[in-house]
Length: 284
Ligand SMILES: [Zn+2]
Image (cartoon, rainbow, N blue to C red; front, side, top):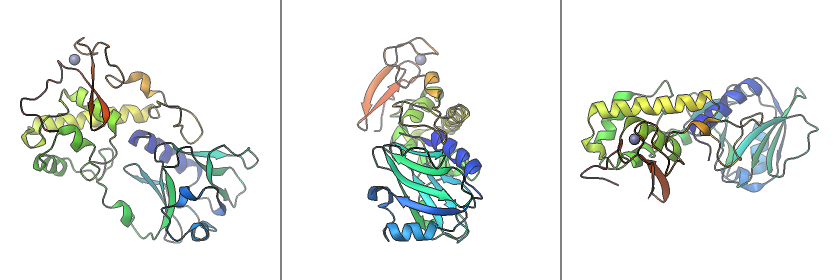
């Protein structure tokens, strides 16, 4: 599943490769890819054709591209979505869902999605973040992120720390892998009660989140199942540097205790039992 660093890597790739170009042709190859565009494929294509892409932006794991019409193209990669920039005569990929051709005759932008949980839609634009993305909180790599406001809302919740990190209305873009890595780095158990968290713990956690996301970003993101690639098809290699995630039974890189895998929220959580002791009053 692409997480925030992967999506940011994709955004940067698209910023270099499609911004300033005018869409000339739109082909929707699978209806599921545009299911969120409720007005249908013909409307989707009509609102893109002839429009110049003005920018490539991101909120959490959503990408959006303001168009010169005032509309915006919104993309979500879902479980396995990829953008590929390929020459026009390159053969179609097996899971090609949407193809955009450009007026300059240069490489096409192809949206490929094996599991089809991702998708594209065009929405009314205007300035700022599109309406359908405004419910998402900023992420800690975003200049608009407010540390004090985050810490205050974190301590107002009566929940567990990992559940809070995965709550997109509180802090966006952190998935399972980066939550585990950040909690390990900050030496905090995932079931620590958010309302009992000290400010120093919260600040250490934020610093850990930024360090983990920043490292992943500079490496081009994490790859686990081979489905994620960046805009040119190159895989990230951050997975080789994960400290706890996927390392059950191996020694903690800090203290040597064996990393443990536990099931939480129907997913695997990895932690060091010594560095991240279970709280006396856990919250789940
Ligand atoms: Zn440890």
